[in-house]
Each structure stands twice: as structure tokens, then as C-alpha cells.
Image (cartoon, rainbow, N blue to C red; front, side, top):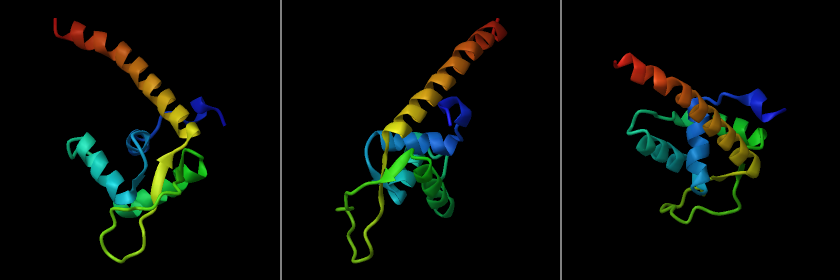
Length: 115
């Protein structure tokens, strides 16, 4: 599978990779970080999030980290921590490049439309 064969990414996938590019995180942390980065414009449903994380892990974009969740305050099971893989970084870079190219072509139309 080539990088171009998996483009474009769903916004949810892009945002998960963006958050994980900043460092490992657990599911609830991903939900909150995506909400913050999108000014509460995108909400990741917890039930669907873990399905997406399993898919992304299967594709080799992310992996469960060997780290434990030291912030866990109760006696419940430790949270799974996810991190972006090198392949995930390549996927993210390719998608950002694709989006930047689209915007370069779209911006002139906005400027011309304002005239």
C-alpha cells in the first residue's frame, strides 16, 4: 500500500495523528486534546474512538506504548497509552502536504471572489 493510496484521511484520523505527534496519550486525553485543538468543533465518541484506534494500530500508524498512565488516580485498570509510529508520521506529513497544496489552489479563488 502506498501513502497516496490511503489519502485523504478522515478528519478524525488526521486529528488523532496530530495529537499523538505531540506525544503519547490515552483515549480520554485524545478526546480532550482534539476538542481543545478544534475549539470544541470535533468530538470523538469514545465507543468509536477505540474502534478507530484499533484500525490505526492495525495499519501501523500508531502503537500501544510501553508507558503506564501515571495520572490514573483511582484503582481501576491502567489506561492504554498510544503513540504515533514512524509510518504514522509519514502518513501525517503526506496528508498535511496534500491539504496545504489544496489550500494554495483555493486561496486565490477567495481573493479573486472578493474583488
